[in-house]
Amino acid sequence: MTEPGAAFVGLAVVLTVLTVVWAVSLALKDASVADVCWGLGFVLLAWLYVALSPELTPRSWVVALLITLWGGRLSLHIFRRNHGRGEDPRYQAMRASHGRAFWWRSLFVVFWLQGVLLWFVVLPAFVAVRAPEPAGLTVLDLAGVAIFAVGLGFEVVGDAQLARFKLDPANRGKVLDRGLWRYTRHPNYFGDATLWWGVYVVASATPGGWLTVLSPLLMTLLLVRVSGVTLLEDTLKASKPGYREYIARTSAFVPWFPRLTR
Image 1 (cartoon, rainbow, N blue to C red):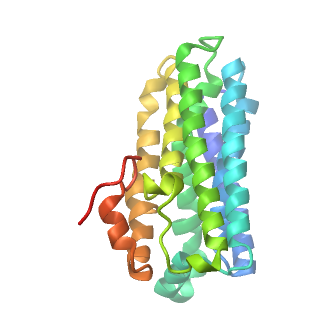
Image 2: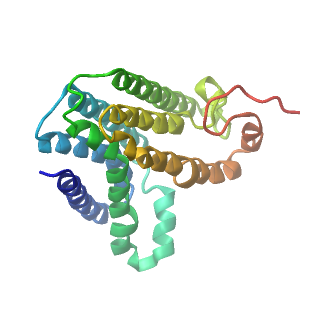
């Protein structure tokens, strides 16, 4: 199968699967299932591309396994976090905005949009999995895996620190500013972006892989300006009294030492 053909098969498959998930969301009256399926969508595409590849290399297996580790953990984390809490407030607001039309509009503005985005973000992995050359792992591959590991570490540790902080009733209404959260307001988002830059570096070890640079750029933009930092902080500034002071002294995204404030 040609490269464009395999890529568009991936898009068709992920949109089909998300259509089924959309039908489930209608039965549950909860569009939050889209968030649980976000990480698993990447896992699905990674292994689909492995199955469609005419020739596999060690790089193919490494990339698929890394994405499985990240995507599986993320979906499990979101499922545990959201279980029993009802629909996410973001989707409740969208439901109220769209009114009675939300049930069918959600297919396009939530599920299919998510499918197209994750399909585009995973393009470096598509290239890395299918490239027959170099046959062995290179220095760039190892560098990419190291960057991926750093990103995954930030995401896992950041999520764990936040979950532990929220379990203590004494922290209700307070701002987490310890651990990784002392150096960045969003260690989990930073980690998410970083690991996709790691996948891109692995793809860059293959001929033409560097051309997929728009994929990690899109993921970083989504995390910083769209569904991540900006959207979340609008809520936090209103709900946590000390959050504006936290913003004044703490880096928004890239980890750095806290600034001195008056």
